[in-house]
Amino acid sequence: MLRFRESSSGKEATSIHFTVDGQTYLAYAGDTIASALYAAGKRAWRHSHAGDPRGLLCGIGHCFDCLVTVNGVPNVRACQTVVEPGMVVTTNLREE
Image (cartoon, rainbow, N blue to C red):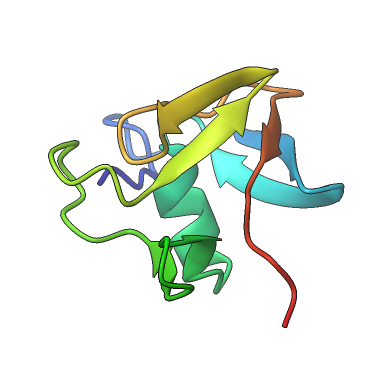
């Protein structure tokens, strides 16, 4: 999972805004979707077949617990996908 707030030059990285389930979130250039959501306090963004909340688990793309839909493309791994300005992410997290 990547989270970059400062660039290699020591300057603060460029901030990016993206949307998840209709809510705007802040990320920094180079952040993954998962790292930006985790930094914002969002720990789950889908449910298992049994109804258990799922979000970031391995952080390296092996477990597929972090799947989201990005710009209409389903089953995208949030831990491996870098946030882009204006990106629209949809989760399948059911409100309880």
